[in-house]
Amino acid sequence: MAVGIFDSGLGGLTVLDAVQQRLPDVPFVYLGDSANAPYGVRSPEDIYKLTTTSVQRLFDEGCDLVILACNTASAAALRKMQESWIPKDKRVLGVFVPLIEALTERQWGDNSPPREVAIKHVALFATPATVSSRAFQREFAFRAIGVDVEAQACGGVVDAIEDGDFILAEALVRSHVDALKRKMPTPDAAILGCTHYPLMAEAFQDALGADVAVYSQANLVAESLADYLDRRPEMIGSGTQSAYLTTGDPKKVSARATQFLRRQITFTAA
Ligand code: DGL
Image (cartoon, rainbow, N blue to C red; front, top):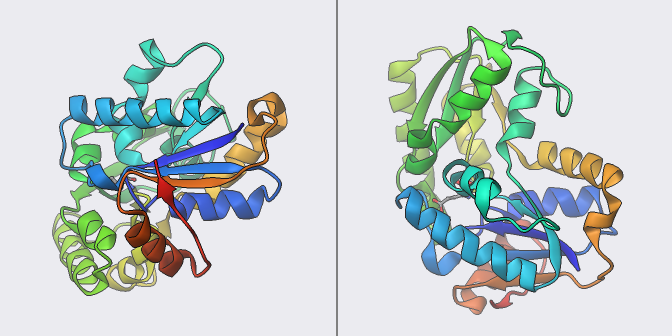
């Protein structure tokens, strides 16, 4: 057994890297569904089907706890999975609640009524499916009042990153930031609401300007997982084997992952 980390492709490696650093003794099984990426242009039904197939694969690998290190899956599929699909002895957690708790100055699980917070104008960069789910806006509304969230669906960025084409990814980031700024000229904060985007964090910060605080999820998810496992240590299970699984071409995916994390990562076929 181990903790499972799932993403549609390589973006979840940004989360994996942070959780491995925060919890060096916990074995993690990573599954990237690169054969079916990007998810962000698919229908919610399709995303649900693909996400449950991959999470089942991680349950079969002996994981009792799976982190959806994918905002698109968290936004489009997690609620339905929690309502009717997840077995009683398993847990599946998403990635955006820890980020929204941080932005709305809340401790883990603080469910008190919404209140005013320091941040007023938030730019959200995410995939088309995440933006159209309005899941971020919903989670904000539960916790804060008077926060204006302007969302930009960043078509093409995930594909370019999966292809290792960083020149195209950077050009797309700049044009999406320009489009956002036409709608919201002076955001206080920007959310990188897709786990692939921290790989382009410099391009986002540069295009947004130094006075915009850019938030991404990896470290916040790592802290919240550490806190969760403190309270529920039995969810780690007893296994010791970490693994990297992909539905894509293991050779290609290993090369990209090694380039992203700047250490040797070897994927095998899922
Ligand atoms: N990393 C996924 C996310 O956080 C990318 C989704 C996609 O494949 O489009 O949304």
